[in-house]
Image 1 (cartoon, rainbow, N blue to C red):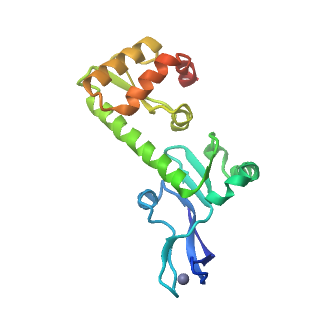
Image 2: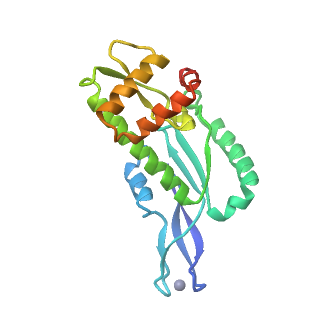
Amino acid sequence: MTILNLEKIKCSKGHLFEAKLLSAVSVSDNPELKEALVAGEVNIVSCPKCGEIFYAECFILYHDSKNELIAFVYPLSFQEQAVQCKAKMKKEFELALLSFEEKQKIKYEPLLLFGIEDLVLLLRTEQDIEDEESILKYLASKLSLNTIKIAPNLARKLGIPKVLPIPKGEKNLEFKSLISSLQILIKHNPNLLHYVEFFEKILNHKTIIDDIKK
Ligand SMILES: [Zn+2]
């Protein structure tokens, strides 16, 4: 699902023109659109009168089903109306859910963001985490570790990676074995900053393990 809307746009000199802007994108079918978004190449317009090239802001609905991420991205100027935006988002999200088949029902909450920068920042951070997850998967057998994967939306909510190391042969996630596996991983590669951060976080907030296991 990719939706382009014809919108009225004004350049900084006040010239009015129309251009098609991306207003909804499902990146599961369109990975190249995710790359374009992260690179800041989406909704760039050029004024036909003066040639000014700029980013035209509009509402964007972003959906990545694989990563369990739905974001309602309002223009930055809407931040002052955050409460109204949140109520509108809830209503629209519930309406959208009604039209889905039962098995496709989305079981995670949408995110409310203001400004494309926030979405780009989130996507870049998640890409960084994914890169570290790939390194963990690559190193696992060498370090006698296994990995388990938790739901992406849960990992996002807790601010932790979604691929976690556990000792080889173990199937369940336990506090002690998670700590020892993280220690092994970080000792081997101290540059995995998101895992270092997760290690410190779980040491300080032991109850995270209960949230993960929920
Ligand atoms: Zn112009």
